[in-house]
Length: 523
Image (cartoon, rainbow, N blue to C red; front, side):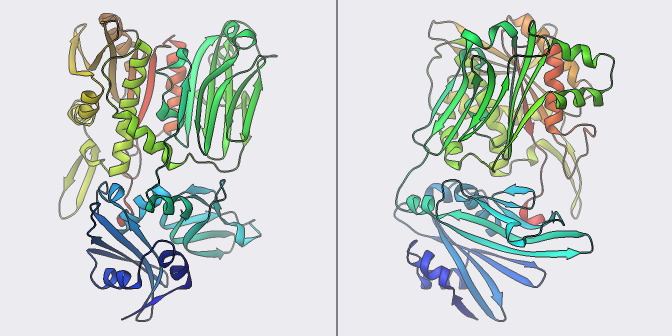
């Protein structure tokens, strides 16, 4: 077996990352884990070797491709202790995926936008004339980068597809700075207006896809009531939503969408405002009381059509918040707290703590505890666990945060002739206790709306609690088909509408995705 090194390896990995050829040879010959990926006539080899360091546990990750009996080494990366210690698996494709999530740039293949693509066939618009533009690296800061793109464009009759064995792009400026001891995400400023604290948290603002909604009186927006609702600023990202004297606006980096406050369908009474964002678009919706009249007695499809008619959309260049913001948010979520300066402050921290559950599940692959899995010689079936059987797992995931944040979590709290899933309490600086009522419900539950509009409000009233959180556990995916009628965004939009109709402005909706997507090794 010969090991051949490309010019890219010599110029980047050897000269800039200080990885020697001998280190790579040892990793290929004596790996701790290795994985071969075969796709059409291409074989890719991924090798991981543990290495000793005075700073702690490190890994060397090598990416190569087979040519006859030779391994052609394209790229290799050092993985330092702060990332190596957090890896939940040494399976090479998982190591590469986690590394790319940390330092990767977004890439667009056809209409798909992601940082990491593995063993996937992606449909392409047959009208695409320029094949070189089918794949695009999204690099708004214009940093130097290295790409591993193993893609074959296939065209048959009237269809076209990109067969992707592996695709990623590494921001070498950020990666090299990390190797040299640099840190990112230290200067992050988040400002949230008091009236939406708890309904908008820092974690809401750093996701690629999101929705912030609130209900207010038309007389309370615009004019002298102008100002931002929230604002996030870091070295390389800016995001803001608010009102000018005459417009509702959303701004992300250099892109801004505004919708006028006047004329509006009915410039009085209540208005439900939505600010929504995806990597390639910003959207605003304002639903005043004329919306309720226009959909009265009509089917659900008419509701969606009316919402779309009132939506303003700005198509944007692909934009994904930098990974450094997620690192910052994770660090903030466990920063110690002794007391809370207000009830709104406590509500915000409780909301953020519950949002962290989805992040933990996704980042370390912790889906299985939420499923009843039947095993034979292989997995026979997967079904979501009963709601009450999931509660201990939720409590465990919140346990360390509760200690750091000085919160008391009371599961199955007896109240009003029933049992509230969780009562979370914390001390205010005034010496009083603040409380949040929390209910969990399956997205496919028959009484999903009843739990939101009747059950949780009843518990809150009995406890004298001014804020509640309704956590919707979403399982629809490769192994479970319910709810069939609505995907996650439409389900949340529907529930927000139900809450608004019931006048429940003090309940925050959270969707927790436990859908157990297939891991790369199973694709």
